[in-house]
Amino acid sequence: MECVGARDAMIQYEGDVYRPPSEASSLIVQAAIGCAHNDCTFCSMFKGKRFRVRAEDEVIRDFRAARAAYREVRRIFLADGDVLALSNERLLRLLGEIGELFPECERVSFYGSPQDVLRKTPEELAALREHGAGFVYLGAESGSGRVLENVRKGATRNEIIAAIKKIEAAGLISSVTFISGLGGRELSEEHAIETGRLISEAEPSYASLLTLLLDPAAPMYEDVRAGRFSFLPPREIAAETLLMLEHTEIEKDCVFRSNHASNYISLKGTLPRDKARMMDELRAALKAGGFKDERFRLL
Ligand code: SF4
Image (cartoon, rainbow, N blue to C red; front, side, top):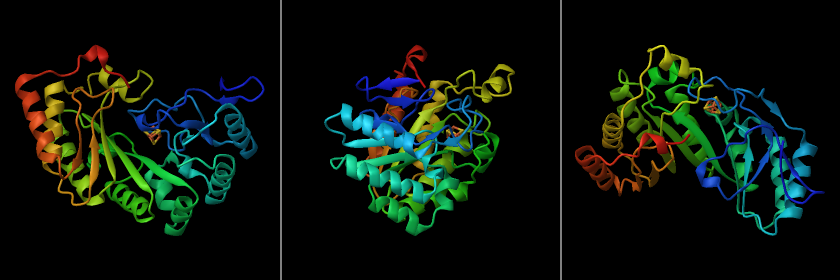
């Protein structure tokens, strides 16, 4: 258990808590523990936790503790892995409580799996937005059906596209992550092309690229140890990203980032406007090198 705040008003955390990089300054409260899917082979985040919805009174107690500890809370991130799996009734009650306790809060965000999104009706998603929900962070990982199957994502390419479109249609903001190198060398080209095409079709507001890095607790780690899967070196990752960007044909603005601690090269821009500039940056790196040293990459 980890605690924050005054001695008589502490936020309780169970196990390791994860949040997207853009929620670094947000108040984090666990509304659920773990991930309902918990089967992706590259992921070790919640392998030690069994998914459960946290008791409502415990979550509200944490909100009150945070209110007592912090003068201003502009953003709240509800952890853990897929809070959108909670019933809409529960989510609306939590958002209502946040609205009363933190009137200055500008947005409440959480992770949601494609299946969580597809289970909600458009009206339910719109109700979440009306009550303060902002970003839904969704791990798509790849646009290739074969890669998704290999890593046991639990969602098809079409389900991922439908989920992203549904989030955006409800007025929520989708922030979608993909993982460079996830297909290994064998599926690298397909992974790149199909990911570019998925971004084009689904049109998320944000698309972020991480680069594959495995914790020994991730099931895929065993494939690497056994020689069944190989990481791509930085040059091949850059070539894969270049091919992916080449296959994005998006009309709506999409903020594209590959500036996570796991990435060999940092890119940031808005598609379609900055596509050519980011591709030039990748071509320059392929010529001159300058990739992040392996020792400085982090999950
Ligand atoms: S990647 Fe996301 S959906 Fe997959 S096991 Fe990890 S937290 Fe769950």
